[in-house]
Amino acid sequence: MSYKELNTPLRTIMTPGPVEADPRVLRAMSTPIVGQFDPAFTSIMNTVMNMIQEVFQTKNKWAFPVDGTSRSGLEAVLGSVIEPGDKVLIPIYGRFGHLLTEIAERYGTDLHLMHCEWGEVFDPEDVIKEIKKVNPKIVAIVHGETSTGRMQPLEQIGKACREQDVLFIVDAVATIGGADVQTDNWYIDAVIGGNQKCLSVPSGNAPVTYNERVEKILLQRKKVERGIATDSELAEKSSHHPIISNYLDLSQLQDYWSPRRLNHHTEATSMLYALHEGLRIVLEEGLETRFERHKYHEKALMAGIEGMGLELFGDSRSKLPTVTCINVPAGVDAESVRSMMLQEFGVEIASSFGPLHGKIWRIGTMGYSCRKENVLFALASLEACLIRHGVEVNKGAGIQAALDVYMKNA
Image (tube, helix red, strand yellow):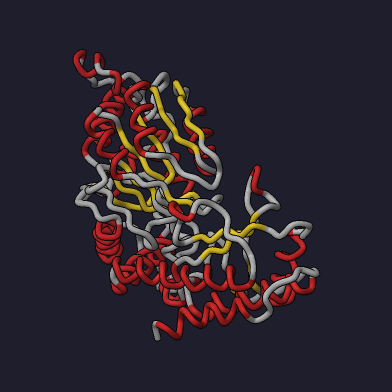
């Protein structure tokens, strides 16, 4: 039996991830393979570490990718610092807070959860009060919640964690490279990013960074695993148990990324090329310029949505600049509209999860997908499909409102 060569359709991807890969990233992935300990490759590894530090705005010694999807980065960090019985506080304001919860549960934590309405975020003071009440070892939180299109303020929470000697771990998968993430200034102990969103790199590795507070726990747990921990070290809570995972053991991964290059796994060579190019493009554009570009296209998209006569979902004060959520008009089959946009126009937008499934659409403006032509095409195709579904919209007004934003700033 013979099989045909791959021939995937061209899409305009306007979901909150994955997004369109930058063509320069795809070209980088075709770079010839070299051995993982070849000096040419280890030089690339060092450059990637430096670029992660810059993009994450940190001076942390440890900044490297974990091979796997973004979830591998989340589990590597959480699984390497959580021990059975540890108190972990997770404020949940959407789907991916529940993911942090599921990961933490599997490591036997004493779990403490906070909840707020989907479409809102927490008042930092409420989280700080709960930190003082619970006295956890770890606070884990999502920075940009793509399921609701909200972004949680972090600086006050991070400062309170540092004052209380609590580890602060942040899922910045949806914000890194598209919105401001100040690892050091916000007192974040560990940050997990993602390729397939604002970095415009295919999913396949997860850049992470962590500081010496996290490293201390990793080194103590490694000594327990090797049976070389002293009595005083064993007396400390953070050295009772070895790290469970081998593949996602940060203490072993940092040995691999250290100058010693201790063999742990075979590095995903082409994925590292891709991440190298994605990070390089971010830094070439400049962080502040890139953040402003995302806000600029967000503004045009929101103007178009409201000009069309549709309603935006969620508290505008906490909106995530890289994801715009729209209330589905009453009586409309949300999935039918999405399907028509994909089939007739090749434009993909997203639905949502849990209590919001079928009630909102989510449009991502992330990385390479965050472009004028994409925003205008998404608005035009959405309007056309809504008209076909019998929805009364302000015909042509959405595109004109978006063009007003673009032409005013031309």
